[in-house]
Image 1 (tube, rainbow over the protein chains, first blue to last red):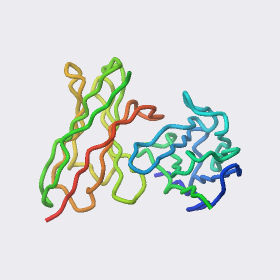
Image 2 (image 1 turned 60 degrees about the vertical axis):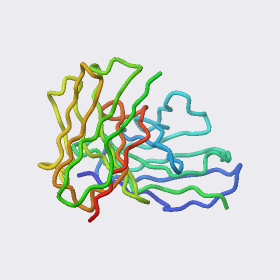
Image 3 (image 1 turned 120 degrees about the vertical axis):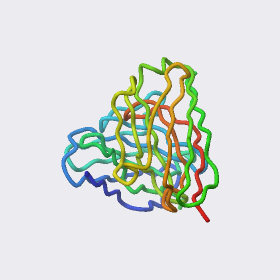
Image 4 (image 1 turned 180 degrees about the horizontal axis):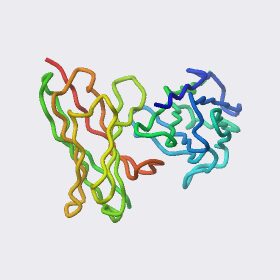
Length: 108
Length: 116
């Protein structure tokens, strides 16, 4: 099973700042990594698939990078609606499909 | 417009059973694999099970193998998850999602609470 480790667990930033979230895989997942955003009381929303491709309707301030075992989600300038939980997920080695433990982006 | 609507959750005693349903609309249901993902209260996301469009291929996380069964009725555009021998640790919000991965559409979830 491929374990995904996200860091930091919590990121405290102000609107307008840049957010950098990390996801590390226990073995190579090539570029088969996605990022999801989840707000309280809502279902997850797909942001990025295959490491760097924005999903439909996702603003350009969200970008993904990386391959192999190290991945990054960057939010170039935080908007108020971006404060949420973020999860990475791999589809390279499955079953099972696995998620990281999540990063909470909170308002500083 | 794609819509996924889960139902069937509730309070059940340990060892009990529930059948979860996910009614789909707005796309050709039989052409897509479908997935169940769960989230325990205050915790992260966990993939539970997936099924191919035809229903011929089914996949499970180890913790539910032998207890949960995923199925679908393409004539009714409905996905199911039969959950048996429920344990405390199965308490979670259960989401259905369109596709085998890269899920771009999700339902709002149905809550399963396992407690005596």
